[in-house]
Length: 329
Image 1 (cartoon, rainbow, N blue to C red):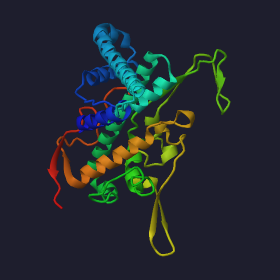
Image 2: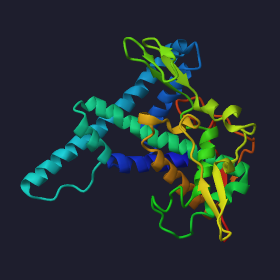
Image 3: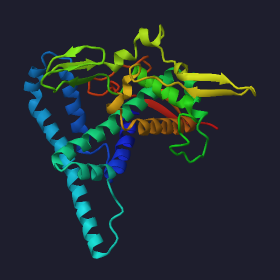
């Protein structure tokens, strides 16, 4: 399923962000996955330089493919803009295709190599993290199928879903399942920042950071902290995100609880909040709702809770192989 979700998110990001048809079978995908895995290994293996010595040529080739793809995205966008400018000058209609994200970057940043790097970052953020998250959601739901109706019952059959119809107000239980999964399996399991100020800086709590200090924090550990989430922090319990209120007419109102970025740093916070959070949530809820309502899934390898594969994100080790049957209405 992870491969299927990667194909879906790759196509969506290719069309929405870059105005192009993009498939997970593109050489970029394999090169990016390999480079990410080897880069992630550096943070865990003290002998990573030995690995780089042994596999450095393959790593450099993978990085070259990734960078070339980013440059190609920018080249196509520049060509499209030139064609549009010519069309407008000649009084003809410009092309309808457009990669809004790349166009905005080109308007804001003059250096094309910076735009290329940013385009790859956006593609990775929208492709890998969302696909990884949906894989973990499906796995946990198959482990605890009593929560499947939380998603299927909130999405009306044969309805045309929009951003507003998939809001947290109208689908609180679906979002609770999604957020609870990301608590246990955050798509970016650890993050780091480095101080660039030559005199260092002081954190809000008074902690002094010398120049070039590296600060590392681990959303994976935050999500399993019993101090934050209680004694059942390791349990998959979507109801921890649900707030129920019985109204005067006896009807139960269900709302999604809001957590601060310090409690739940999965999407970062403040000026560095994830720009694609809403898109990821809507994609996840919609895809899982449609698939679970129409199909029955069964894990091929019932080995309990899965492990993640070493990478910069949190892919499932070995993927998620399932048997699929059409659901009987």
